[in-house]
Length: 119
Image 1 (cartoon, one colour):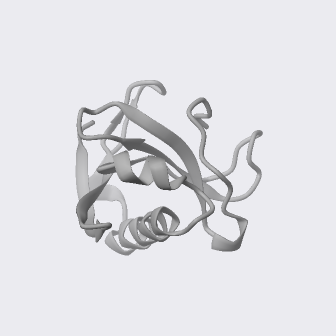
Image 2: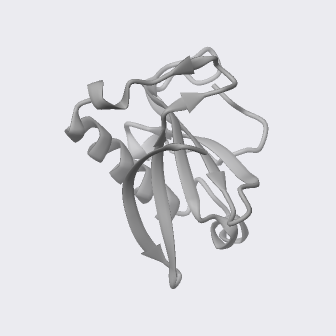
């Protein structure tokens, strides 16, 4: 779960971390993090935090377990989700994946996360 630290925030008395994945093993590529505009990274991290804090993406039970949100892909569309979104994986303190979800650029289109979607 390597990557660049983008943001830390407190939620329910616990510190949470948002990182941008440098290497995406499942997709076989390495991201050149330094080539991504700092404002784009900051905006994406802010959307991820807002999605975490909101009620549409994650259950309260999942939120209680999550300590790290890893952005594995920046804004894109896919066959499974035609809305522009970033894909985020959520991990607990042991590094076990708790959930995967899409954080759309339009927050009003936020959907629930899952454990089996990765696109």
